[in-house]
Image 1 (cartoon, rainbow, N blue to C red):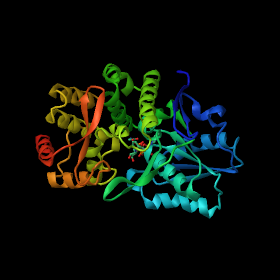
Image 2 (cartoon, rainbow, N blue to C red):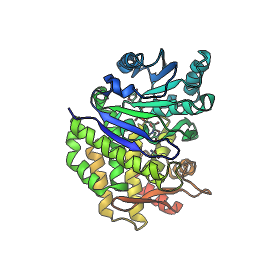
Image 3 (cartoon, helix red, strand yellow):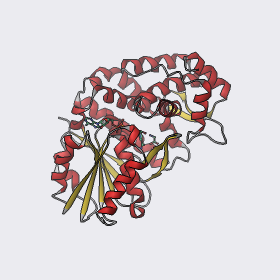
Image 4 (tube, protein in one colour):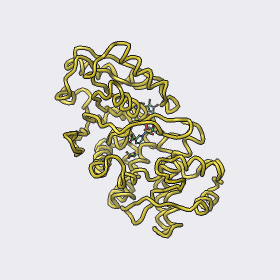
Length: 364
Ligand code: NAD
Ligand code: GLY
């Protein structure tokens, strides 16, 4: 069983926090000690994850907080909306919970993003802790303080930057994760290679079978290295004034696929995986990266059991959806492109180049 790893996020104004990664952390008293003191804690989860893990978390938290409530939301990306956010707020207000109340996000990225947003706005801010239970949430969404809900016109369009107090990533909870969700999480792991660490990309290629077989030590390394890369980027550019945008490699097309098909049809990680292949292709078309890289990435993504063929939404619809992307500026669509292996940057791409690329992939 691998030992606990700790990755630190370094931020100004005393907002540093730890990401603890290891087996058995949910049941370890130390995971829950040293958090902000409060009369009450509220676990926010969903109707899939709560029956699996909420009782265990509650038992641990009862050693720390006099009162521990549970709010279980409906499961699914399609419920990452105002109605779910309101259910959290309704509970907090209905129970007259004070501004010291600590929220615990127990679930995947959907729960983490919504709980973080609720924590950011309830009484102008209460503390929260991320307890990510999907691979995707452990390697990406629980780290870095982006919180949001979706809008029918655009993914994650309503939200706030708001950092957690701590992240507890227990590798054992991944045992119950469906295979499709594990693969979706691998998309965000793969992302870190091309944008920041060519050596990590090689490591993923070499260890993909062990990752798919859920080898704990290999998964633990993937979570740690991913968090190290993300912590480094967020520490330099918390509010995405520049560098942090590289974490959105594959997301411009990915978000368009999610919104265009209707939230929940494709998993976020699946849409990002396909989006990375298309963004790699754009990188080649813009003369930044050799065509061989596009093939290399496509092969890896296919090996991970992730989609490489975009849905046929039509060029106009893709362009319309991508113009709502947060990286768009004055109507120009900007993509994270790979400049050389392990280095990425934000580039405006002419509509004609995007249209050619979409046509070449059967998406037009
Ligand atoms: P998710 O939260 O929908 O979880 C996936 C599914 O797995 C759900 O059905 C969930 O109930 C289930 N599940 C979760 N943990 C489980 C477990 N241990 N055992 C069994 N089932 C389990 O999806 P996700 O892939 O975790 O997150 C995707 C979301 O994260 C998207 O909304 C995306 O926008 C967001 N995201 C945010 C950031 C960020 O920086 N804030 C980064 C990446 C993605
Ligand atoms: N997942 C993108 C970011 O955290 O910036």
